[in-house]
Structure formats: C-alpha cells, structure tokens
Length: 189
Ligand code: SF4
Image (cartoon, rainbow, N blue to C red; front, side, top):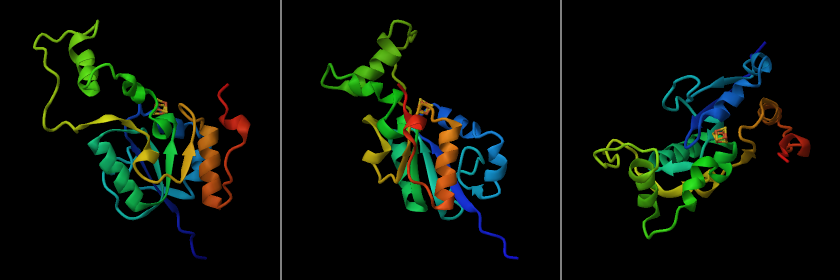
C-alpha cells in the first residue's frame, strides 16, 4: 500500500513574543495524530534555518518591524502554497505596533529609540548610545501587519490563538474542509 505524502509545514516568528508558537504546543495530545499527517521544514521548532523544499503551509507569527522580517516573510510567500498569519501581531501588528503611535516629532523612530535607550524613566545608559551595530537588522519606520507586505491566505486570530483554534484550522486545511471559524471560538469579549 502506498503511504500518503505528509503535508510539509514551515513556521517563523517575526516581531512577536513566541507565544503563538507556544500555543501550537497547546494542541496537546492531538499533536500525536497531527504528526502522522505533517512534517516540519524550516521552523524554530526544528531549528532548520532555510527551506529544504517547497512547503504546503507556512505559518507566520508576528508582524514586520525590521528589514529581516520582510525578507523572511517574502521568502515564506515564495516557498509556501498557503500562508497563514497566526495571532494578532501577524494580523495587525499587535503589541510591537504600539510604537506606531509615537509620532510627536518629525522623526518618530528616533523618538521611540531615544525613549527606549536614553530618556526612559528606568533606563541606565551612561554612554547615551542607541545600539547601531551594522549586524542589527534595519528597523522599519513602523511595524507592518503581514498582509501589508505579502498576500496572506488565512488569519488565525487571538493573542495567542488557542490550541483548539490552531488545531481546527490545520485539521480543516489538511482535509480540504476548512471554512473559517465558529464565532464562539474567536470572540474575545
Ligand atoms: Fe505573542 Fe500575542 Fe503576538 Fe502571539 S499575538 S506573538 S502571543 S503578543
């Protein structure tokens, strides 16, 4: 009997807190059944840094706050048939996008960095230097949701989404029967 090909999944964490990746583990014992249907490619879960082949599903946590995030996201779009934005940071920028509201000066990014590294009430920085090593990825002017950078096929809401909702989405996509979420699974009021 021919064995069914496992779906290949890649994941990445951009400007997020890794909570959405931890939520994948909240699928709990259903992961055992899921792992019979999927295998992971590039992902912090496997520590594989580059795509080894084209993937069926890409899962992105976090939005884009620097140029490296943009490159990773574009790489996922090129290499994945279906791209999923997982969690509020991927969908609308989330907590990192709080810096988008800092706009009192003509240089909001500089104002934000000065507050973080120099003038903040709990900051101790005798040299008064804002980190600027060339090895650091260039910060973008603001934090962008993934859908403003590439086309996103599905979004899984929540901060973090529950393991149930992630399982429902993956299971539905793998069986070709995903039709969106029931309201009670994604309402937060
Ligand atoms: Fe973390 Fe919430 Fe953002 Fe997910 S949506 S990366 S849990 S802050």
